[in-house]
Amino acid sequence: MATLSDFTLVKDDNPLDVHAQFDDLRSRCPMAFTSDNGGFWMLSKYEDVKRPPAHTPYRTALDRTLKPARILKLESVLTEHATREFANMVKAGGGDMCGDFGASYAAWVEVSWLNLADDTAPELARTATAWINAWRQQNGAETTIQSEKLYTIARQLFTQRRANPMDPEQDPCSATLRQSLVVGMVAPPIIIGSICNHLSGDKELQQKLRQEPSLVDAAVEEFLRLYVPYRGFCRTPKENFELHGRVIEANQPISMTYAAANRDPEVFEDPHKFILNRPNATSHLGALRVALRVILRDSADIEVSGSLSYAKMPEMGITKCPVIIKGAGDN
Image (cartoon, rainbow, N blue to C red; front, top):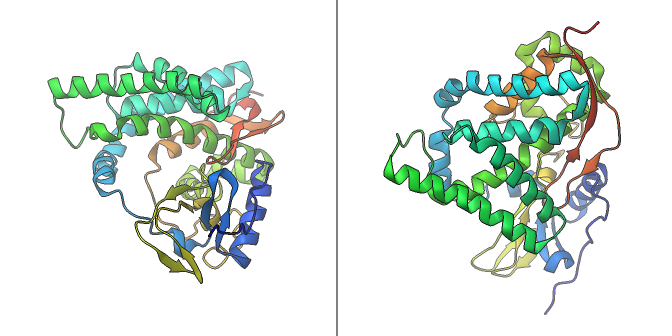
């Protein structure tokens, strides 16, 4: 027997509209079903989403490369990359924070994190951008072409590391390489665009963080809570189970909707409001902290100067954020 839909997905990708739907579902139907996109369940409460099934082997490999000590060692390198890439925008008087800064910086972060050759960064940025655009446009043929290029980069790296092994603390397992290349290029430009848009609309906060850089770490955590760059990802149960009075059958996809969970009012007071120093769990935020510190350090003001573009499912946030930048040394 087919499950009746509890809702239909909003057509507008503006995060304000998406969050309005999340708020509605969380309050009246926290385990909701839609027949859109082939049919799936959506969880929207923090307690239901916070402990998704662990992909233990993959997380173990990734976590070994993201230890605080290693991130600290990378900080100076990432700062150099961020400084160089942002200087190009300051010199131009502005540009697209997502495409002109976020994408290029993300490529250099991947190069540094995965110990790739420096000449891989431009290729990775071009290929990942082409893959992302084709995927968003649902161009299957072009997505496959660009995906194969990403696989080639991953295979070359794996072959290279088999011939010349590195310290396992420095090198993730090959099974995660291609996915890391993709996700590592998709998310940072979106969150950087969302942060800059927020700061453009809150000049008091922008100046406060510029004058008190010690607050940047806490600000990044709160920005990620507010502007997580993915609505969620699906998990598939192996057996039937019941939650919130609903029976979910085995193999029915369930969206672990992180964006909704991060604004659950039962967990976060004033969930749609930016509040510094919430008791959020600290994650691997080193590269993003570096980027925000450099953006604030090397600018006197950032102002959104045009229309924003928004990401489609499963992403969420800003994919184009045109800005005017006043350099730190400008009068």
